[in-house]
Image 1: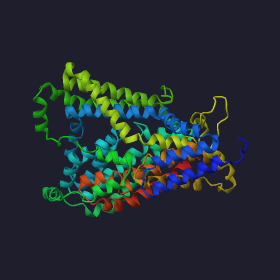
Image 2 (image 1 turned 90 degrees about the vertical axis):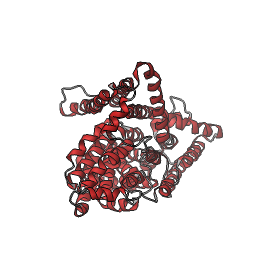
Image 3 (image 1 turned 120 degrees about the vertical axis):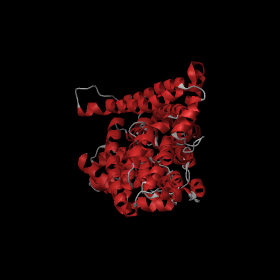
Image 4 (image 1 turned 90 degrees about the horizontal axis):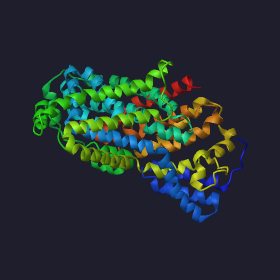
Length: 511
């Protein structure tokens, strides 16, 4: 692209980015600064207050069109989860793993593994209460200290699973659209980087905490249950912001977790057949999604198999969730009530999706105004008009100041991602890291998908619930009954080590 002179709109856009980052550093919500910045950029470009006002609406509308498939998948997965709760199948899915917790070392691995799997399919929202209420007591009785349990849950769920978000696809979808890269490529690379970061963090954390593991004893569980929860949780929750705070609040459950006998008694009250269906869906649900994962992954190892293109993976996940939800609701409610109950589950799913992610739309809208692919509709330009590439053109004008080092650029994007996560929200910074990746990639001679995946690691691992005390780490610490700041201290070095190593691996794997 030919060099374009930097105009007032470019400088206003840069000031807007700076204002949003500064707002994140002060842990305040960035929705209002994003809207104001969108208005100012549009005014500087069009010189029309009317067009600038319209751009506020257009920005969120364009973001909604780009990201609605993400909202739909979240809604359908949440609807499925609510249907499984009615059958108590969500508890049954994890209950068998209590039997393998013979000592604290095994318990650490089991907690991490089950948390990762549940979080990969449903986000950490149900993983936190499920694992904490069903598996964590057994792990503590096996000798695992509560702090180690909280660390395992946070790293595996809110770090490793959420940072890749490979199944639901929220994070890679936002990153890829902002970067102008392939969603599938960003998702694949984010999955690899999340596994590298998570496995290193789990190992380093285990080595630092293993001396606290004690011989198995029921007295450990009695002592832990006598402790009160984290007293600072409410104050820290108030300091957090939108999506991750909503996820933390969403970890509550309407009814307490039940034993096997209580589950059967509860289900048998309306119909004894529900006991059978509860067990069936506890098996069928994970198998169905494992089949989805196989459909997504196997073509990469066996090129002869048909590969899912574009957003086909998200449609497959959403379709599977919808079908399982209908069948589970039919089993739980019967044919007469199934129609109304299914509609309620979907409505509740959309309510949660927009509570958890709705605030991302005006934020993404501002960063989309800096990308040429989406700037035109936001600024109200004609279809044949040449839209501005504000951020790309700013980077191009300063290209001579950027060191020709892939490592330097990669760690710069990682740092920006971590800064955006300081407010306790992992996803709010993804439009920025994605847009920045798309602009920096040509200047640095790198693939924008690689930089977008690196930025995603920094944003989600920091704000998603591993390094920031006012994120949804509050929920993990509260369930484990440990001080949240103690959890942050225990997680800091392992997670930072994992992020550094994974970033170096990204530079070497995808130069």
